[in-house]
Amino acid sequence: MVADFLDGVLLLPILNALNKTFNLSRNNLSNEIPWLTTLKPGVYQDISTLLINQRWVKRRDTKFLLTDIGRLFFERILITATTASYTPMLSQMDELYLVMYSRYLNGMKAVKNCI
Image 1 (spheres, rainbow, N blue to C red):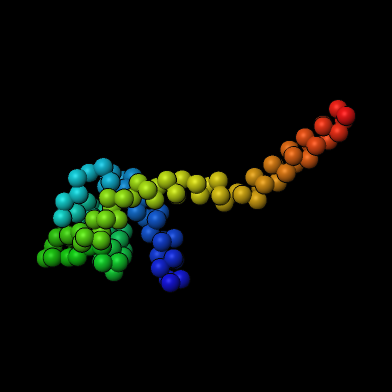
Image 2 (cartoon, rainbow, N blue to C red):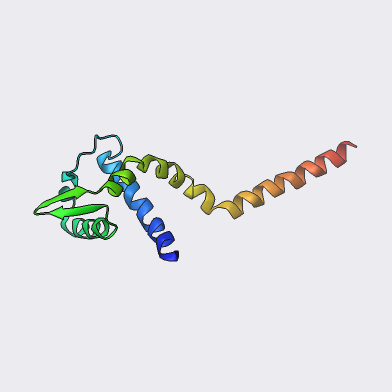
Protein backbone atom coordinates (compact mmCIF):
# COMPACT_ATOMS: atom_id res chain seq x y z
CA MET A 1 0.00 0.00 0.00
CA VAL A 2 2.70 2.52 0.98
CA ALA A 3 4.84 1.41 -1.95
CA ASP A 4 1.97 2.13 -4.35
CA PHE A 5 1.61 5.62 -2.89
CA LEU A 6 5.33 6.26 -3.26
CA ASP A 7 5.18 5.02 -6.85
CA GLY A 8 2.59 7.71 -7.52
CA VAL A 9 4.83 10.39 -6.04
CA LEU A 10 7.62 9.27 -8.37
CA LEU A 11 5.52 8.56 -11.44
CA LEU A 12 3.40 11.70 -11.51
CA PRO A 13 6.26 14.10 -12.37
CA ILE A 14 7.76 11.59 -14.82
CA LEU A 15 4.48 11.06 -16.68
CA ASN A 16 3.80 14.78 -16.80
CA ALA A 17 7.31 15.44 -18.16
CA LEU A 18 6.82 12.75 -20.83
CA ASN A 19 3.45 14.24 -21.71
CA LYS A 20 4.94 17.73 -21.95
CA THR A 21 7.75 16.50 -24.20
CA PHE A 22 5.78 14.16 -26.45
CA ASN A 23 2.15 15.37 -26.09
CA LEU A 24 1.13 11.83 -25.19
CA SER A 25 -2.43 12.55 -24.17
CA ARG A 26 -3.09 14.52 -27.35
CA ASN A 27 -1.68 11.94 -29.72
CA ASN A 28 -3.68 9.04 -30.93
CA LEU A 29 -1.86 6.37 -28.96
CA SER A 30 -1.09 3.30 -30.98
CA ASN A 31 0.15 0.03 -29.55
CA GLU A 32 3.75 0.86 -30.41
CA ILE A 33 5.46 3.74 -28.59
CA PRO A 34 8.42 4.82 -30.73
CA TRP A 35 9.01 8.00 -28.69
CA LEU A 36 10.53 5.90 -25.91
CA THR A 37 13.56 5.05 -28.05
CA THR A 38 14.20 8.76 -28.76
CA LEU A 39 15.19 9.42 -25.14
CA LYS A 40 18.84 9.78 -24.15
CA PRO A 41 20.41 6.35 -23.43
CA GLY A 42 20.53 6.61 -19.62
CA VAL A 43 17.04 8.07 -19.41
CA TYR A 44 15.77 5.53 -21.94
CA GLN A 45 17.05 2.63 -19.84
CA ASP A 46 15.54 3.93 -16.59
CA ILE A 47 12.17 4.97 -18.05
CA SER A 48 11.73 1.79 -20.09
CA THR A 49 12.60 -0.36 -17.04
CA LEU A 50 10.16 1.63 -14.89
CA LEU A 51 7.32 1.32 -17.43
CA ILE A 52 7.95 -2.40 -17.90
CA ASN A 53 8.03 -2.98 -14.13
CA GLN A 54 4.72 -1.13 -13.79
CA ARG A 55 3.36 -3.43 -16.51
CA TRP A 56 2.35 -0.44 -18.62
CA VAL A 57 4.69 -1.42 -21.45
CA LYS A 58 5.88 -4.73 -22.77
CA ARG A 59 8.85 -5.32 -24.98
CA ARG A 60 8.55 -7.36 -28.14
CA ASP A 61 11.82 -7.69 -30.05
CA THR A 62 13.07 -4.10 -30.43
CA LYS A 63 9.62 -2.51 -30.03
CA PHE A 64 7.83 -1.26 -26.95
CA LEU A 65 4.09 -1.85 -26.86
CA LEU A 66 1.53 -0.32 -24.52
CA THR A 67 -0.48 -2.70 -22.39
CA ASP A 68 -4.16 -1.98 -21.72
CA ILE A 69 -3.39 -0.48 -18.33
CA GLY A 70 -0.53 1.56 -19.80
CA ARG A 71 -2.88 2.98 -22.41
CA LEU A 72 -5.33 3.91 -19.66
CA PHE A 73 -2.67 5.87 -17.76
CA PHE A 74 -1.28 7.66 -20.80
CA GLU A 75 -4.72 8.61 -22.10
CA ARG A 76 -5.59 10.18 -18.74
CA ILE A 77 -2.32 11.92 -17.98
CA LEU A 78 -3.84 15.41 -18.24
CA ILE A 79 -5.92 14.69 -15.15
CA THR A 80 -2.74 14.25 -13.13
CA ALA A 81 -1.25 17.39 -14.66
CA THR A 82 -4.05 19.40 -13.07
CA THR A 83 -3.26 17.93 -9.67
CA ALA A 84 0.48 18.47 -10.10
CA SER A 85 -0.06 22.13 -10.99
CA TYR A 86 -1.09 22.80 -7.37
CA THR A 87 2.21 21.51 -5.94
CA PRO A 88 4.00 24.90 -5.73
CA MET A 89 1.07 26.50 -3.93
CA LEU A 90 0.54 23.61 -1.53
CA SER A 91 4.24 23.44 -0.68
CA GLN A 92 3.98 26.99 0.71
CA MET A 93 0.72 26.46 2.59
CA ASP A 94 2.17 27.50 5.96
CA GLU A 95 3.16 30.88 4.51
CA LEU A 96 -0.27 31.27 2.92
CA TYR A 97 -2.01 30.62 6.25
CA LEU A 98 0.27 33.09 8.03
CA VAL A 99 -0.52 35.85 5.52
CA MET A 100 -4.25 35.11 5.67
CA TYR A 101 -4.24 35.12 9.49
CA SER A 102 -2.28 38.38 9.58
CA ARG A 103 -4.80 40.02 7.23
CA TYR A 104 -7.64 38.69 9.36
CA LEU A 105 -6.12 40.20 12.53
CA ASN A 106 -5.49 43.53 10.79
CA GLY A 107 -9.09 43.53 9.58
CA MET A 108 -10.35 42.92 13.12
CA LYS A 109 -8.29 45.88 14.39
CA ALA A 110 -9.72 48.10 11.66
CA VAL A 111 -13.27 47.10 12.63
CA LYS A 112 -12.59 47.83 16.33
CA ASN A 113 -11.20 51.27 15.43
CA CYS A 114 -14.41 52.10 13.55
CA ILE A 115 -16.68 51.24 16.48
